[in-house]
Length: 97
Image (cartoon, rainbow, N blue to C red; front, side, top):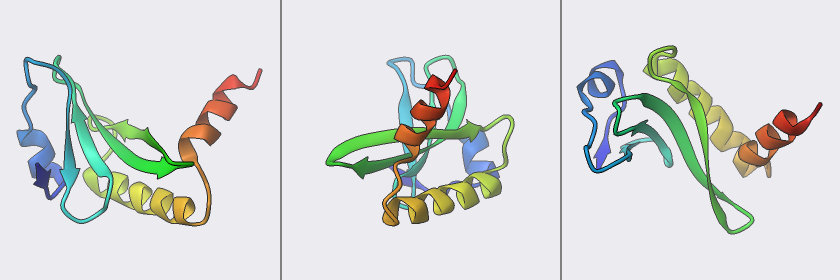
């Protein structure tokens, strides 16, 4: 199901007792909001790199506005078009001592 992700639509999203669900934006391909069974919400971006579907968390909906998340998603999309893989880069940073 696609929605326009903004402050109001994020606030209205309800958890699904069967498990996590991602609601994708109607404008930015792959940009969405993951709602956990417990009701936690986070902005995410799904994309493909090396023929593998990947997903990165942009930030918590409690700590970031939908507008800022949208800007970051667009920046990530541009980086991906330029050959970057944000999920792999984040993992490499996290693995550094």
